[in-house]
Every structure is written in C-alpha cells, then in structure tokens.
Length: 472
Ligand SMILES: Cc1cc2nc3c(=O)[nH]c(=O)nc-3n(C[C@H](O)[C@H](O)[C@H](O)COP(=O)(O)OP(=O)(O)OC[C@H]3O[C@@H](n4cnc5c(N)ncnc54)[C@H](O)[C@@H]3O)c2cc1C
Image (cartoon, rainbow, N blue to C red; front, side, top):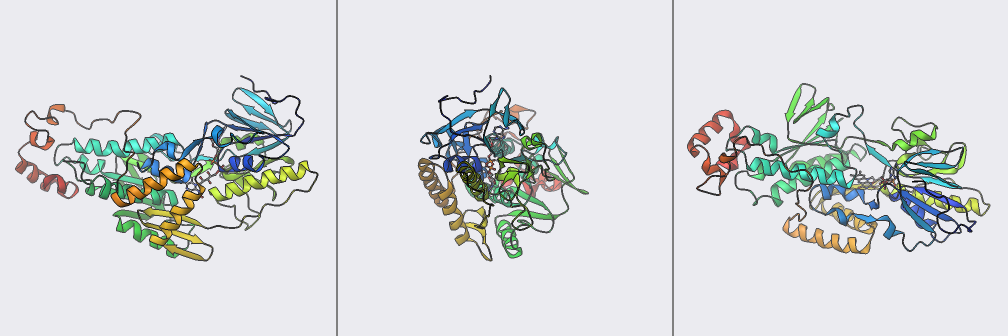
C-alpha cells in the first residue's frame, strides 16, 4: 500500500514535516509543532507511545501494559495539523527527501528521525531467545511470563529435586539502571509478594544474581552512589557480581570465564544499539550505530533532516555523546521542531544545548539513588524523587491516577496485581504427572517418597540449602 504525501487537504501549501517515531523525541517534536503553520505526519510502526522507564514494572508484574502505553493517535488527537500513520519505515532517501516505508514512500520538506534504539547482543544473536531484553511491551510480557513460570515449575518439582535451585535462580546480565531496577524488583517479588502463595517452594529461597562487567554497577553514576546501590541491592538479597563480562549464554546457563551459573530465567540488560534505519542514511555513524549529528541536530549535508533521541550521537556539548535518556530525547525533539519553525520563518537555526536534569534509578520499594549534577542522594528521599518525576513525565491523566493508586497500594501491601501469565504456556518440569497430583491430598509433596527419605536425600545431595522451606 502506497502512502500519499498529501493525505488530507491537498490544497494546503504548508511545509510538510515528517516525524518518524512516536517515542519521547518524536512525540514532543509533534507537540512543539502543533500550532505551527506546518503539516505534520507522524509515523510509527506501533500504535502506542511506550513509557520505557516503567517497562521493568510491567516485566515484574507491578503494572499492566496499558498503564504505561498510550495510543499515539489519542495523544495527538487535539493537534489539528498532525496526522498519524501506522507504518514501518525501512529507510530514508536523504537526497530525494523521501521516507521509505515497508509498503510505500512519503515525501517531506523537513524530517525528524526518532526511531530510537533496540536491544544489542553484540554479535551473539543466539542469546536473544535464551535471555530476552527489555525494549517493548512484548519483551516485558515475555520476561514476566518467564519469571512467573519459573515459580510455577518449581512448585511442581518433587521435594529435594536438584532443579529447584535452577528454577529459583534469576540472572540479570547488565548492572545499568534497568538491570539494577529489575534485580531489586525480582528480589522483592520473591521476598514479599509471593511469600505466602506457594506450598512446596519457599520463594524466599530465590537467588537473584546481577552480573555487571567492570568494577561497579551504575557505572555512569558517582562512585558513592554505585556503592550505595550495591548495598541496597544486597540488603534485598541480590548477589551483585562485578568483574569479567559474560562469555556465553547456553540453555539455562550463564558463563563468565570458568564460572557457570545455572538459571532458568536469564534477562539481558547489557546493551542497546541504534535503530537500523540509521544505516540507510549513508552518513557517518558511531560504533553503536547512532548518527553523528551536527550541533543543531541536523544530518551533515542535509539541513532539512534532523536526527534526535537515542538515534543521535550528540558530542558537541561535553565531547562525549549525550546518554540515551528520555529527558534528552524530549529536549532534542523540541529543539528540532523549533529549528524547523525558525527555518520556515526565514531565521537561522540554533545549536542544541542540554541542561542536565540528573538521573536516577530505583532499587526497590522505598530505595533508590539519584544524581543531580554535584548533588546526590540515596534511599527513601531518592525513591520519593524518582516516584514524583516518573508520575510527572507519564503521559495521560488516567495513567497518572491509576499508577499513583497502584504504587500506593503495592507500597503498603507489597502486592503486584498484574501477575498474569500470558503468551506461551509454561512448560512443566515433570516427567511423571501422577507424582504431582496425588489422589489423597492437594499437597504435591505428600505423593512423594516418605518425607524422611526426602530429607536425608536432600541433605546428602546438598539440596537442603536451596530448598530449605520445602522441608520445613
Ligand atoms: C527498559 C528501559 C528503561 C529506561 N529507563 C529510563 C529511565 O529511567 N530514565 C530515562 O531518562 N530514560 C530511560 N530509558 C531510556 C529512554 O526510554 C530513551 O532514552 C527514550 O525512550 C528515547 O526516546 P526516543 O524517542 O529516541 O526513542 P523511543 O522512545 O524508543 O521511540 C522510538 C519510536 O520509534 C518507533 N520506531 C522504531 N523503529 C521504527 C521503524 N522502523 N518504523 C516506524 N517506527 C519505528 C518505535 O516504535 C518507537 O515508538 C529507558 C529505556 C529502556 C528500554
């Protein structure tokens, strides 16, 4: 299906601005153009804007997907000059000023390219299936499914089974903000949310292992905040392993040098790379695939084409590229939009400048670290700051209210209400089903060999430590 370049009012002569990507950068660019004398087409391959900073909360069953994703169409419904197309962009023809779609093409006068980033496995694409990353709603639901399925499978294992430890071990690869958040949240699920829900297993026996290559987690934060994050994680029961990088991921195994850790749930938080659309521009990219933009965020040699957000490498402020953060994407999107309006009005474009608003990562209920320039904080005050800033940036009044309520509820009850297993069915770990559903009781362990034998075997095999609660 070809897409018309002048979809609505053919007679309109306003310049046509095409925005690719309805993420933070694209959406705020559209907002900045909403009352301007330009015609805007906003393209995205998804119909929703995703609030990625809270994606880990969907992956750990604290929030539902609909609470952090909003239809793009509804967000811009009041912007009369903005039209939304659901479309996959495969490339951009800069000399001809055309966006190439999977099913057509679209001409533009000005372009704002904001297709963001995707999970990177650094040449180990076979790890993708074994250790999903977290970038989309689908990823979050798959991780949630794997976490919940692991507990369901462990509950069906015979007492003393050596597989217990594997099912109750969760490895998170990557100790950046999202890895830290994920590790803290899984530890909380185990120790608080699920503690009364199972009969065979004791979720408190869960091991959460966070592997970070290099000397410390949250490497881009001040050293003392990294240390604080490590302590807060450890107080939740997370094993933090820093040092060498992961060398291999096999089915149910993570390998770091000579050390093999067996785990049924492995989550990849160790890297992202720019959206592949960047390659089609045929301009210099950095090693992460990002476009090396000019000081005004335009593509070298193409003053009408802007690249913003996670797709852009903007080194002009500090000599280092600005990090991939939502507030930076927002400001870049707005800046590109304003420069387009300046050009339309016959004025000169301005350089982009970002005022650092700081960064923060939450570690669990009531603990976080935050860094605002030279000022930093950790623990409960940082967590409160994290909470309010995330509520503030959330899109949609309904979502804000629902999430305030949900967070309040789970803060006081430790409950995570979105513990639904969706997608593929969980695989049972058992060979013999009759062992699991005894005739004489609902309790699986009663159909097993006599309890005493179990205990002796478990002690002999060393399973007692990993499975202590089942023997109580
Ligand atoms: C799990 C996670 C947690 C994060 N936590 C934080 C945090 O706490 N604080 C923070 O500041 N930042 C955080 N970030 C980073 C932040 O989300 C990004 O910096 C920000 O989303 C970048 O905005 P963007 O507009 O460049 O890209 P995105 O928001 O990723 O938007 C890109 C858009 O482009 C669309 N798109 C992509 N390819 C195509 C295509 N070929 N055709 C059509 N459409 C396409 C996508 O569907 C998407 O809507 C987090 C990111 C992740 C993944």
